[in-house]
Amino acid sequence: MELVGSGAEVNRVPQQIQATGVLFDGLLDDAAIFPPGRAPLPEAVVDHLARRLSPIGRYVGPFVCAGPRWSELMRVLSDRAVGELPLDVALTVPAGLPELAPSLAAVALEGRATVVSVELPLMTPSPRELFDVRSLLPEGVTAYVELGTHTVDEDLIAGLAAAGLRLKVRTGGLAAADFPSEEQLARFIDHAVTHGVPFKLTAGLHRAVRHTDPATGFEHHGFLNVLLATAASLGGADRARVRGLLAERDATRVGTAVSDLSTELAAAVRGHFCSFGTCSIEEPMADLVDLRLVGAIAE
Image 1 (cartoon, helix red, strand yellow):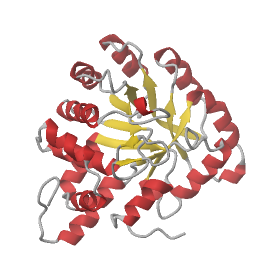
Image 2: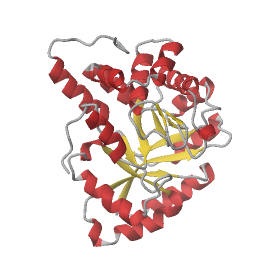
Image 3: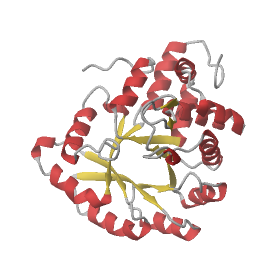
């Protein structure tokens, strides 16, 4: 039984190769220094640059660094041992709008890393605040505004669209309450797709398929489920269908449905679901290999 829709059987293998390439390239933002991984920053930078030169480099997005640790990052990059490969950074600004301008001013003075995006929460998002964020962005830098899953509504997402901003939502954390339900995440995906707002997810999304963590009992979303749910929403599926795809736990069914996505639909999905932050690149990659959605990765 297919989860999203039937894929063309003609030239299926070439299409699958093309579609999965589109689906996974740059999907994994490297958040190694954040919990629960909490890798030491020097080690995380060296590992990140090594991954970018490895067979999995195409799947790895920018290095995620918190603004308060920018100076520490610059000290690490001063060490020639990390190599000369340029470092693309997704900069988080935990204090929100008041610290955005100072953070951008600090990074503008450095040439050892390129900030490609900023991520910040807004405590009381308003149209004026959203346009204030947009007005501060340098050319070529995108902004993801973090909104709590419980507060995401259609008006807020429409405001992001009007301001030309993107959306960030947490899908996990250190407590069960940090994990949104299928209904909450389905509502968010539907609103984002309806208003054409690209989004990223962060926290708790380390594995490909929906599952219960045996150690904590927390219910984790799967990033492949999110890809399929986004595809369904793009196709006009109702909320119940989107919610059902987020709830699917059969890895074989999920993997087959992902492999059946057309190249065109895969590109459209990634135009909406841009990436997710993960403190472990290895875990999602291992799942993709196990499901035969990417080739075996050489050690």
